[in-house]
Image (cartoon, rainbow, N blue to C red; front, side):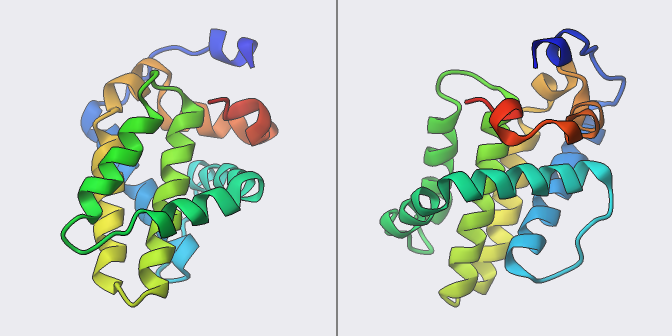
Length: 163
């Protein structure tokens, strides 16, 4: 992992492109988690789904309990999403925490779909994309989505997604 980090060079992608990729990955993961919509065949999206799946396997009950215990209403859902995401990043940004927020967003979208809050699914997708897009400068300095997620295919979440 240290060697992977040491090889990173700032990416040449613009912040606007990285923002679009954050929204694309949010849409893809939520479509994958809820079973609604098309999922991408891009390597970046496939690796995000794989890392998220691995995180779900390790911490699924915790994520489920988090969603159930948030006592969300239509009026408080966005605020609670931001509170959880802010808590994840309180000690700084790293790729593992980004994957964790994507995974939480996917679980939250599943919760909305199961509880008949279908507008909530698309809202979570937008919140997730917006929140991660705000990290685009950091993502750019780390090599961008493509560099990171296309070279991570040989790493599992235990090695890649350190919190």
